[in-house]
Length: 224
Image (cartoon, rainbow, N blue to C red; front, side):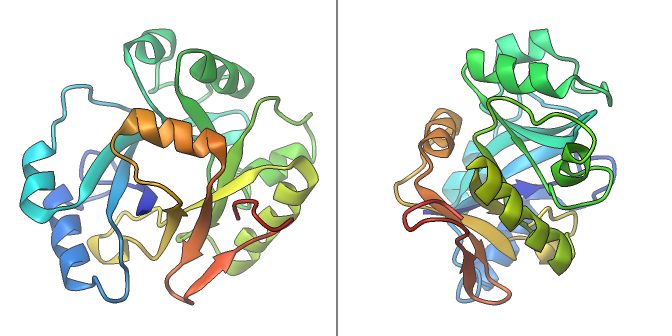
């Protein structure tokens, strides 16, 4: 199963992409971007009442939800957001404590994964140069469609050094950009709970559909 784990709809303040427009373009570009669905990761917010089941049925694609939050270690994608996590953290806070986010989200049934780690200022690599490594990180975004090639390259060393799994996402804010990078899972992902379990298990790899390549730093069998 192939999912784009990182994209923004018009619910994010810097995107004007309607959710249904993403679905339409995936239908048209099926041959070059064979996605089975995507995860909406809106900036600094999560709407627990959003319901995309009618669109899922209409287009035959999976629509899951997460959030992108901001911490002193850079930006982090939170998957498996639930009522406990929303009570614990104010996603609108742009200086959330990264270690607490990683630890507490995991304790409450989700997973927090640093995104575009190779970028300056908002990426994990730069912060690890001056701060101690975070504990409990399972996976990072190995391929980000909005990052420069050299920024994605930096992530390979990070994954090898710390044993992180790697996933892919387009980081799309524009309809046409969806699915340029994605994540190929070994098993079907039915819901957010299943996504969390799969990300923790590590049976996936980052895919770049612009080059038809997968990123596999580290030993055989490790996600990359």
